[in-house]
Amino acid sequence: MGRATAAGLPASNKRDRVLTAAIQCFAVQGLSGAGMRDIARAAGLTEGTLYHYFASKEALIEAAFRWSAFPAAGVREVMQRADTPLRERLLRVGSEFQAALWRRPDWTRVLMREALRAPLAGDESAVRGAVVSLAAERTRALAHALRAEIRAGRIRRCDPRLVASHLFHALIGQFVAQAAARSTPTRRSEADPFLEHLVDALVGCLERPGRRRGPARAA
Image 1: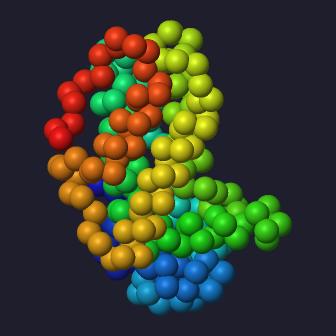
Image 2: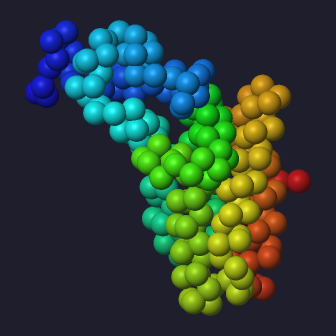
């Protein structure tokens, strides 16, 4: 059994509660506006207890970023399945990114805003490192996978980083538009028409003539 806190809660549960409260505070007040005292109050803790879990606000921001599941886990694994049609693999990568964006939409908006501001701030601290572009890690992973596809002769020669960047930035643009309109995203069990059209356009440019594209989308 894991270590318990003085309140009787498992330590992992209290840490999750702190991270949830931190994300909520950052979503409302921004990264610079929300202080450790605000986050401690929202989590139902004393400020001293909060510092027991996170030595600084920068460490808390970095932990919240990682905890919110934005890293690119799975992109390489999905793209390595060469026996699966490229269209199907790109749809899987895109749908998982959409799910990450919508998991905590308020937090996603904060990260987007701060990622735009960070290069101008000249701040080389952990705060800046935690708010790098949402798509950056996935873009690198997908570009690496596309280079392997080119070397294997499965797709046409292209600029892999440009293709990967186009996919993820287009999906970020869709998120921004839907969030602004307060529309509900497509359920994960359903195919997203925007993603399908986007992937079909990319696959049409990338695949060599005669290669299998997978099931065609119904008209």
